[in-house]
Length: 287
Length: 287
DNA sequence: TTCAAAATGGAATCTAAATTCCATATTCGA
DNA sequence: TCGAATATGGAATTTAGATTCCATTTTGAA
Image 1 (cartoon, protein in one colour):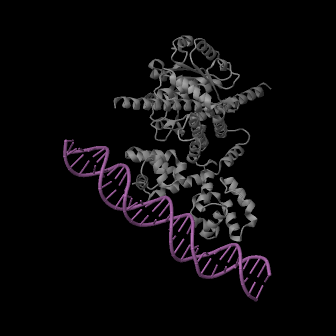
Image 2: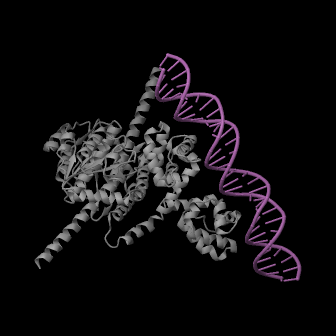
Image 3: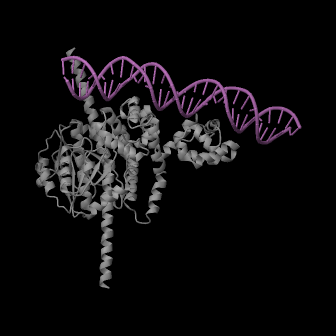
């Protein structure tokens, strides 16, 4: 006696292996489901039944025969699949919580944070627009030096970017406002440089000011922020949006850090390529 | 009078441009919808309303105000988006990889980083020893103030800890070596305080010096590092070990950040509990 | 060929979700 | 500070969809 499948891939397997023993209509249903998993995730029983050429009852029976309480239950697996194979976040948290008793102790909390951050990371690449990413890199590559600004929470991201850029030997300066000299630091930015501003709700005033100043001066501006509604978006040449995990009303930074890491390394790879090209054209010239 | 949006991106645009003229609740709704398009595609009005912190009516009103006959009609756009944008995580990675040939472009890289960091996060809670975590929290809770030190890459983690502690209103000082004054800053640490040193291979000399100084003076020392073989471990009262992801020989920081987040919030929860206890015993005294 | 068992379709029912409506609260201008 | 206009929450209602049930059909063994 086999278990009811808990995720899409085991369901898929089960259907495939049981297929020969199914009745004509159920086979027809099976074929349809495996061929159109996307459709199944969204549509209603009636719609699917029609498309599959069976009756709604057949779909229900099919679900029941695989151990589900009804079609809806089975449909959840088709939906979860679209969420990058991740089952429902809340259910998992809940599972951990009940397993460890009522009071969430620090280890419990660690699980929750790790989980929430994983979730954020899994969605990050889907949410980042490839064109935007490329354009940000174009700007950085052209820039003689990159200036980076982030206040409060965003400072962490800014300092990481600064570190990573040093690592790939791209000139980088952290606009840190030491001695209250934000605006002086912005004034020192050359027109051949670029500026990266990182800012999340509630959007520190210092960051807005710096972004505005750079915008006014026509300095190429890339921003990393959390929403299209951020006041920095209208000022930016390119805006990269990240969505961070939140646990106990405290937001993480993993997605932003991961994006930052990517920006720096991608930039490093571009630089290497450019250097290679330069070398080989030099060789050609010498030959 | 503008048209009802027919696809997700025009809806997104419309929401963004109309945002300022919306009421408080509708703005809240707008933010939620734009931040969680995936969720919106699947969940029911009631679930979404709860997550967004509004009532179901608000979601309907929101949909109506953008010209839809109801929420369901608007939801179709969120679904359509998933339908053509997201085949499947693995398929996606593969598609990106083959489409771009051998050289991984920036988007490909983003997938790799996100994936690697997810992996690191998934192992983090298992690798962290619960007792160690608790002991670190004990030390922090007892401390009047927490001093934090991290150089280079670890500086990012240190500054995040500093931010997070301010957030929970625990006195925190970043030992930043401004003006080359590391040792002066360590000398200023009181015996009732605690020190957190973050250091990863190749273990910056400054961090070792600071840790040694604190150890000599008998100041409670917690370290976050990457191996039991780290020179900081013998000096520490508690050592927390994290294992970071590595892509293109570049290490991430997500696991350390996640641990840091946990430390801060767990500490915050302890403080709250202590405060509650204090209050209720005060009440008892008054009665 | 017949009959019992299994499968099927579709109407009837039941459930859950979407929507409407209205009383209350909030905002904003006078 | 008041009152009108607008916004909001939540209960009541409606609607759509899932599920069940049963009469009919098909299958396959004797």
